[in-house]
Amino acid sequence: MADPACERLALIGVGLIGSSIARAARQFGAARHVAVMDSSQEVVGRAGELGLADVATQDYAQAVRGADLVIVCTPVGACGDVAQSLAPHLEKGAVLSDVGSVKGAVVAQMTPHLTEPARFIPAHPIAGTEFSGPDAGFATLFQNRWCILTPPENADGAAVEKLTKFWMRLGANVETMSVAHHDAVLALTSHLPHLIAYNIVGTADDFGDETRSEVIKFSASGFRDFTRIAASDPIMWRDIFLANKDAVLQMLGRFNEDLSVLQRMIRRNDGQGLLEFFSRTRDIRRSIVEQGQDTAAPDFGRRAEGR
Amino acid sequence: MADPACERLALIGVGLIGSSIARAARQFGAARHVAVMDSSQEVVGRAGELGLADVATQDYAQAVRGADLVIVCTPVGACGDVAQSLAPHLEKGAVLSDVGSVKGAVVAQMTPHLTEPARFIPAHPIAGTEFSGPDAGFATLFQNRWCILTPPENADGAAVEKLTKFWMRLGANVETMSVAHHDAVLALTSHLPHLIAYNIVGTADDFGDETRSEVIKFSASGFRDFTRIAASDPIMWRDIFLANKDAVLQMLGRFNEDLSVLQRMIRRNDGQGLLEFFSRTRDIRRSIVEQGQDTAAPDFGRRAEGR
Image (cartoon, rainbow over all chains, first blue to last red; front, top):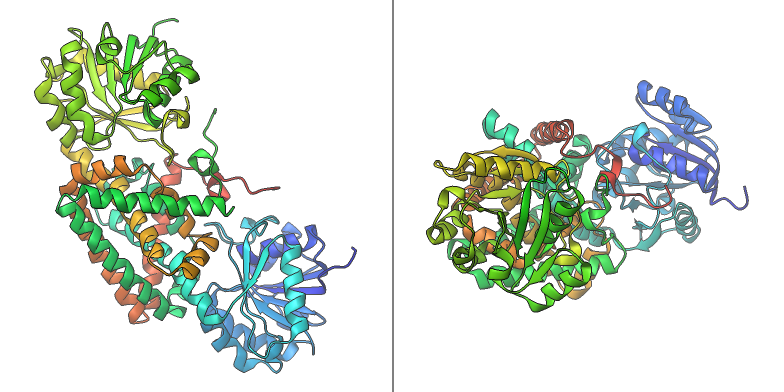
């Protein structure tokens, strides 16, 4: 392996993201040695069966010892406890990072336990599917996706550089911003959409059995896309909403204001207002496709059977 | 062609749905002769270039004359005028149908113009993409999708049978229900989700230029799926919301109630409540996958590059 981004990588938590990093690190030569650790015996056993890493263990010391890059891949709510448990075993000079969808809460929970906080470089790869667990991961999950780093003000430059190299090796585009800015942008682009998706699926579920069955049956074209989002890991999302509470509630307030305007247009039969609004959102979609974050293929690139 | 579902098919309106029906009718032998009509000279010209039909015209009489099945594929808001224009040219005994996403308003607008209302069998194929126009259509759009018929109480049995056979030939599963029930179920499964999607994209657009650019940049995982829905044809959706106003406003009321509950859980740090709610929506998603209306493949069947 020529010039890996790190020598010994340790991943704490082997879910969708952890197992994808493990696969990608090997496939793209980002680490010479990969250790994975999970608190669940079942998950560790499965990681072993899948051959995800050189070492799969339930023991923090065994996973972290000798590692020059340690990435915490647990749900956001567990980060504090994890930091406390792994900190005593961290090598001096090791770079520590995470993959949490919220950065402010993670920094607040993890930093107090660290002896070298300048080498803790929080990160958030914006990639995922609605599936969870070690079997759900795949090596190309991060290809051409963004990974946002939120280094502290006194960050160790070499640590930032090392982590940047690692993520680029996995195929991601790396961007740096402040913790607060990250949490505001993500509240709008990811957390609020997920909350809305959970909510609309819940509304459907409140109907009687007959209607519910029809709602599911005729879910194509609209509702179906929402259910995909709403199928994401419940624990991960509970943690995200609690950890990014202020930003999410603020965005939700704006969303509700805007929705009242649309509701009023419908009630008043304001066709012109609706048309203008809907035309504007179409333009935003075009911008996203042009920036390469999605495909313009019909049906979202989903294969139409027999097509 | 052995046993086509109809002899001469006329399609009024050559957008995504009309052009898909034209392609499918030929590919799956559902009609011996296909005529397409559109009020736009440009669309008719394009339909000719694409070779979508035996006849492409701007003239109602030319399209409808001799047809034993006529399907109106225009936006819902235009159905009344279209019915008035084509009614004088309809052959006696011809079956008339439509593809509108709302049935109550379409029936109210079209029926008064018809001399044989028992042969007007409204229909709604639940299939689509976010693209519009004659180029966007494809023959397999209706494969394994639902097509809901809402025949009037005094419907001609042979007409219902003929239309059922036609849609099954195009690969659809056909179900029959009342106009009012259709409009309530679709308000929840399709119209409300689209309204929410338009709204959340609009909320994003209200931010300043810098944030907006970042919002687009980091749209993966959540917001991106919403923009796809919000990119649908603005005129079609304006018409749907105005035509199905009562059912949409009713569902929106329930949605807002439910959202308040989630908002309150976040504000009060009710992790247990959030977890229960999110687990429930995940189960609904599983039901949809089990019923074959979607794929369980990671990333919604979207191809991960290089995977």
